[in-house]
Length: 245
Image: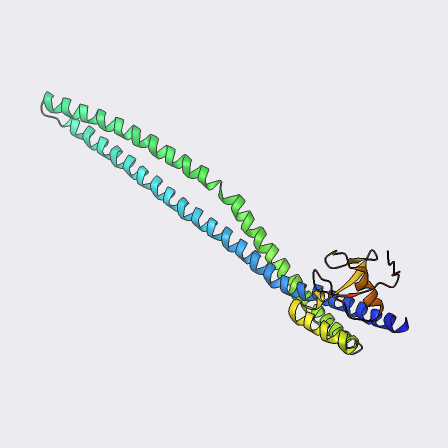
């Protein structure tokens, strides 16, 4: 029993270390991925803001054009009114009067259109503050995440180096038949998925697949057994009790 306990302890220690290494390496991978995602959010919101700014400039240009049209008609009316004073015949006077009335109606229409354009531009401008706040928030989140990751990265890398040393020391304790299977699993699925403890006296701790009684007996007999479902190398917990039924 001493030998199987020794193998169990080694596998358990390796499993703990590999699980911790998987978590630490995952944190190293997630940092840049999270920053990339946040950069994408900044870019997306910035592009939306730039698009709004372009549309806003077009609305402002439209307002200016309409105001110029209003001013042009106002100047035309003033010019015709001056001509009215200089009309030499009643026919000319009446013709100018009719033209002035038509110009005033056109001016009123243009004036209303200019006013509507101004109101549209002002309403459109209300879209800016929420989006500008969103861009600012995204940038602040990015900087906070970047600062946190860069401050944590050296500590994570140092932990990884320490655990790697511990792992190498533990791996040398594995019997050859266990080591061959273990190494193959590490290469194919990764160290954090290479091992699993038997839970509930008969279930794989990796995938919850039920372990056959003969497989449990083989583990007790110091044979390397893998889960038939997830292929993890199995080991027994310290409180395992064999129940043949």
